[in-house]
Image (cartoon, rainbow, N blue to C red; front, top):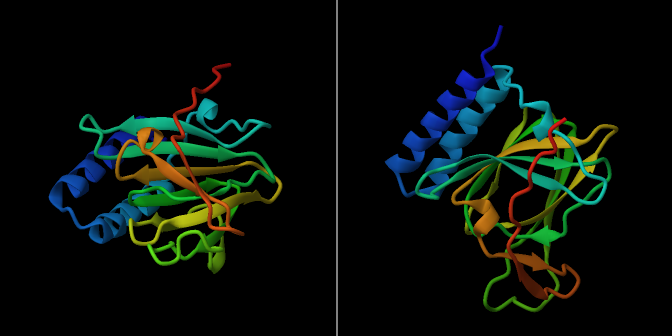
Length: 191
C-alpha cells in the first residue's frame, strides 16, 4: 500500500533542496520535472477534495507553500471544456498531469518592441496523465490551457514563488493588450 503523505513529504523535501541549491531556473525546472515525473509514476494520490472541479472556472488548491515563499505546490483543476485566458506566470513553473487531459496553446512572450501587437502563436501540445512539462520560465511564459476529454483535468503544479500572490499578466491574443491580475488560492469543499 502506498503511503501518499510520505510520498508528498519526500517530494516537498526534494524540491526544497533543488530550490535552495541553485538560482538557475532552467536547472531548477529540469530537476523539479524529474521529481514530479517520479511522484506521478509512484502512484501518488491527491485527496479527493483537491480534485473536484467547479462549473464556473478552474480552481487552484494549495498543497504546499515554502516558508520563505520561494516556491509553491498546487493542485489545479479544470472541468471538462474549461479554458484559461492567455496568461503569464512571472516565474518558473513545472506542471504534471494527474488526471484528464490538457490542451496547451503557447505564444511567444512579447518584448518591449512587440507589446501591444497581436500575440504570435508558438505551438500546441496535448498533455495526458503522467506527462510533465516545464510550463514556464521567465523568458518563455505565455500560454492558455483547456481541459479536453470526458473527465476534469487535474494538474500538479510547482511554481517559483507563491503563485497565488504574484502579479501576473492576462493577454488579449488578438491585440496584445495586457491586464494584470492576482489569482489567489481556492479552498476545497470538504464532503
